[in-house]
Length: 107
Length: 121
Image (cartoon, each protein chain N blue to C red):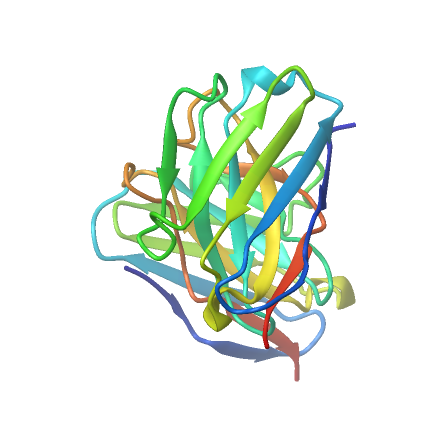
């Protein structure tokens, strides 16, 4: 089971945001973060818990291992308001598992 | 540039069937595992099925096991998902996504834009 908190985060532009993802079983560093905007496919931000994907701005950072993970956005830009999902890919087979998502909205 | 383009979605009656396709370009298709992920409109993401690069190994979520069949044609750079015995709760946007290795024990990137399957009478 993957639990993301909070479900919704209200943030003013320029402020920072911290999103949490907790897994029921340890997954090591086998965790990724995705950003999804309305009407678009998810976009990879972070893999291996802390490695930024190609082209992802440095304001996005990931940390954690085992069962507790964090995505930090240091200074929110207008384009960062979206839904963020974590994905674990260790407990395989039989399946990969997404968290329920955190919506980051404009305060 | 790596690209994925899904097709085959549409309106189908409960109990009906569809075949979804995902055309891949910009990478050596047979080298990479692929998966299907779905999203009920307004809801979260759910991994549905995955397949190894060779096609020799397939995996399914419990919610679709026995009803969905994943396959690939490496000569055509195309991924498929046969969906049968469809239920209202299968209504979703279906995305195909590329893994980073030949086996699916890793993250997805990129994703296609998705194809909408609507199950309704």
